[in-house]
Image (cartoon, rainbow, N blue to C red):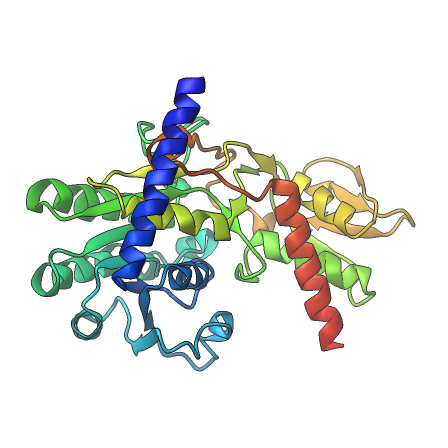
Length: 364
């Protein structure tokens, strides 16, 4: 055990020293999906390492830069309009950035939506990566590429899941990521010698997580109930278990994967799973409230101390095919990368609860 810890410590120290050396050279990174949760945290982290950061930004009618307000004015951050549907815009971004590292974080990442829009999901998650890799081969073939893969690729495989576990996806989202991993990550690494690797990230959350994801739905809804703005909210499968970590921790692992001598895929996870029910209960405690569960199945409800129903179950929020339990084995990441999560499940939930409560209270 002592030998293992010593190895992990040395690997981590080596990566940190290499990062400092490379930071002095002002490395360049291109991030697709820079306006998302992971992209914003990664951009901030790379800036602390003195990187020049380019971000591929998809033009929308809404403000795409709301998560980048703290770094968008930084002269080391360059935003280029384009998206993974358009090879020409990808090529322009690569030609302008001339990146040493590329982080492909852009995706249609909503599992529920993938059942309703499977073609769009494959168009972005699979063909989008193919377009990116094709342009990389022509414009900057020596660049190192990180592909954002997902625990949803494991699907019905029993936990704990690691790099050797079989992929058994049950959603179009999971299927698109598996095909992208096999064809473009493993395929181009083995056939063309491209430095490309997959970070198989388990669920990672933060106050910047999209509001349509269940964790933010819980923190926002309970904040509104605490403030007297809402009476109740509905969820799907309360017993579904996920390995939840903090997105700000996980972007450090992404960076470390591209500093290795050879590209290797890694599972990034906490190694601990919690149910949706537990996420609700921890958020309830963060707001100094109480909840009692009554009933079973779709008739189950969560009742507060005053006897008011604040949580219900609605079948429409169940997935067509449910993944009941995902729990990652991060042993390889700890050994190879010297990486481990810093934020605990309890700290993560309370961070999100506090952020949503303060944001909503301020808006009043």
